[in-house]
Image (cartoon, rainbow, N blue to C red; front, side, top):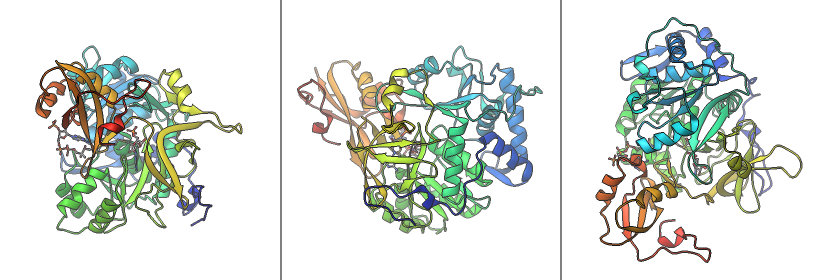
Length: 495
Ligand code: MCA
Ligand code: AMP
């Protein structure tokens, strides 16, 4: 382990056992794996109760690519992909990347309003979704039900590093959801770096219980499994008992989750103690207490890491060396990170997105030129400090609530609540919670009676995804404002 002065971060080279592999696009790396180890198990499908080998999955991606071409999706086109976890859904995703199609993942739990914003902004040419009928006007299919095709895609495993691969919707530091455009190089740099840092090998087996439409489950869980030659047990959702059972039955070595999942694993205390090689946590802060208890219950020191949709993984605690509770470690391979004088965490490197989709103003705001003429820094909107070479996240400059690892933007929830009858003013904050990290709380100035949490949930049902609905509803006479008239959320309680 290298040492570093108190205020600079330790070097990413401290993560590695050897040199980084040569950079290649993920489709090329994956196709090599399918050819070199065709029979190696890749995915356990609980739906069919079977292991899928690399060879079988490779064939499924070729078939799906032909069907996508039939749907009219070609290289550079956007495909909306809104699926819960299944091998068929992953085959469509991989088929798209191998064909040079740009995937736009969308939470299948989004309301019509949330989906419309993304469709209008990304302008996809087709959709593959659990529920394609919702996307009126777009040609579409269910992942397991694509019309069969013998067509050979125009391009196959030929995307270059600069080609866009993925557009992940996120709000960044401000405003309505924007598409973070990640290139093939971004995906490859992030995945190859993480695989090397976490010593991920073909011997590993992941219990995958995360949603596949966010970077954590998709770019860490699925891409890492495909890239390292490893295998994964795909669970349709998170359930602590099912995780323990899957680990025992399939001899799993790894688990990745958000702190809420670790909270539930600790509460459940699986009776059959399983020995894990690596349990990683991210997407939201993990308290030192949960870190200690989860490490004890799972029999391995939890490794916390820090990422974002726009950058994929930025920093990680070391695989070999001290994993510090309350810290997110130091930069991953090829990543540079620093804390600027205002306390904001800045990052740069080959993993950072090309920019927001068609948002020049947001790009201007989010990238800060380097004083010495080096590459620009991406502003994370997170606040931190360096402690003995380890990065500690202290809070957020951006107005963001993280509930169970899902991001909730107060302004979006406020806009919806303002249309509730009798609302004069409303502000939304996050109230600390042991289980969820934060729970969404609405502070309402009413002309009339305060609605109950159930009434608010009913009202939001068709307008907001479930995790964005306020759980707590509080009445206030007026919202606290500063001299400029801006709401001071910190005075409302919660954060
Ligand atoms: C579900 N509900 C929630 C949440 N999840 N409410 C608040 N916060 C949540 N996170 C709601 C449902 O809408 C439903 O409400 C009710 O809670 C169901 O409860 P339950 O069955 O307990 O929930 P669950 O289905 O078990 O989900 C809990 C969960 C899930 C497994 C922790 O939230 C989850 O998978 N979180 C992971 C999110 C994630 O992948 N984040 C990564 C993004 P109702 O009954 O009213 O409908 S960040 C990222 O990718 C960056 C790069 C990074 O660093 O990783
Ligand atoms: P998203 O935009 O959905 O990718 O969420 C990214 C945000 O999640 C980051 O900017 C952080 O605020 C937060 N985040 C991710 N990992 C961690 C972590 N380990 N600790 C604290 N916050 C985290």
